[in-house]
Length: 359
Ligand code: GDP
Ligand code: MN
Image (cartoon, rainbow, N blue to C red; front, side, top):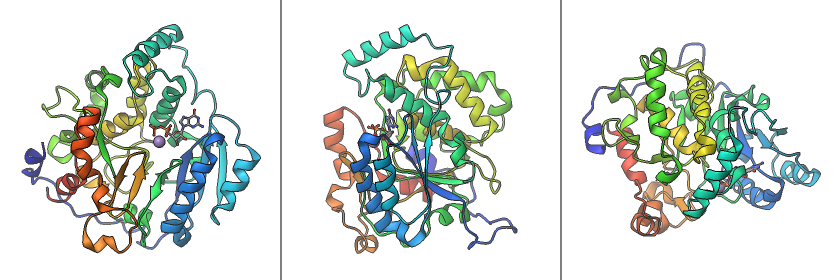
């Protein structure tokens, strides 16, 4: 699909800020961290690295969210780890719980089946609430109302390169709405009906489908190899995600738009967050691939980032002097091991650079 996309010359990479915004204007942006009290130490590790590599220079606020109350210790230690503003929010039952239309007995049965075949988090109930929250609700949490851009952060990740520019201004000033560091293929057993549900959504909602960007202008070929018949499993890893909640400065809006809310509501009512195990990563990625234009994506090649066993570590000489990661461990080099081990195939970050910058 890279070849076919590379041959499309139809889109224009230029972006001009509207007159009422100047490049130096502040950006209303924050880190958003969904986390449990039990993950405090891992989160402090992530925060120290994020502060060291980026935020001591830019001082963006943090919003911590939890389905439980944060402990006093959690609040004390996380607020001591940054000089930026910190806010702590609880996620209510409407955003984290079963909607009335879900048959919980059936949900429990499918969890047992998915656990039995060894799908990651196949048996976990809380993981499903988490994925549904991240798919459809985080951007509607009241503590985030005051922000236009976010950077999602998780416990126990590493940030390994100094970042000397304001990532949020980069996003805003270049009309970017979705930034990533790692892409992956999904375990298809977690999303067996997701793609067909999305196809049905497009049929049932022509008012949304009709205004999506044309195929050549979108990233739709990132998520399908057969011209939209099936999902190929490709998604951006959402444990790192820099995005725009909404934006008055470019063509289409994502998370807070009526179109995305309709899209999410349709997926939610189909039950797949509970009867299957839809991840927020495939949901976000497919939505973004449908709704955004190619030039609104950004691959943050210069941000060294590790989550679990996978990391993005820039290999180019011009980045190496700012990084502490081993370029031999860059995700690209792990392709073979990964696909053998997990029976997955993986897309290389370098391929994304090509995809996103040489169309
Ligand atoms: P993975 O990255 O897909 O393996 O999933 P994680 O276990 O890292 O969860 C993703 C994010 O959601 C992390 O930031 C977790 O701290 C958070 N998270 C997951 N489950 C829960 C939960 O039940 N409650 C809260 N408050 N946070 C959760
Ligand atoms: Mn994680």
